[in-house]
Image 1 (cartoon, one colour):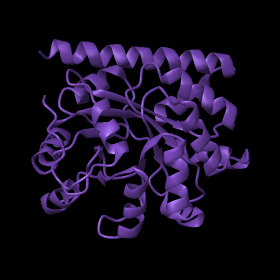
Image 2: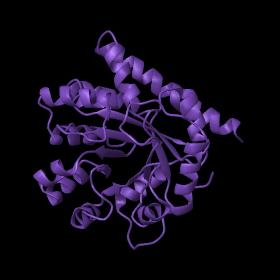
Image 3: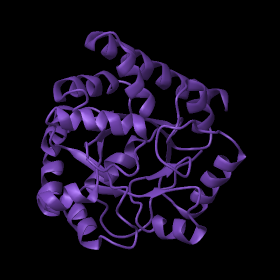
Image 4: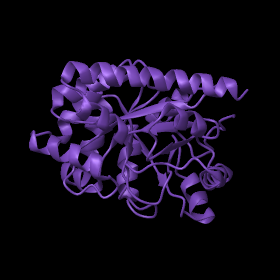
Length: 279
């Protein structure tokens, strides 16, 4: 599968260029998610570093009190992070600690950015080496000033699309997706079980017909088998809730680090072998 370069519109933010370059040409990118501050800031930093050797991009969640796109597993992790006193700046500092590794994308909400001030928020993120930001409650046709502030700082804004997104809307997303597009595998929140079926394949095909930049699929991916299957027709695979479950099920912090590191290695190996087997 070839990844077409994003079209167009003048200078691409530095973060967008770094993110596009992170997508391998011979396999799907592995994009693991870490909730910043869960169960505390130091522990989440350790988890991010344990995954970094296997990740092509790392998604760092900033905990928020009203996370509309998150399912119960990530919501509960975010609530624990908030109870531990985690602030957005703490998560951005985790991103800074990952310099020299895979590019980092923050997952956050509009309220937190507006509370900090968009220019200040994105400048802080850029200084920490953050390449992009996912803002699930930012409508495509709103937030021009916020997007401008991100672009001025060199931070890419990653749009989302769902199976219910129309072709016309996908085409509009394509005009803004200069890094990659996050395709939600199901219409709903995170944490459910993904169905790797003709419906998902058709959705990704529709997105590819309208969006030139890479396409990463997330929500509900748990097993290496599912990652391989999705990696055969998508450019990236996002693993989120299942990583939190692995951490929760570990006996202690050291065991959690070992478990998610092993899982990251297994996923990376599976994606490489899966694309190779597919020819």
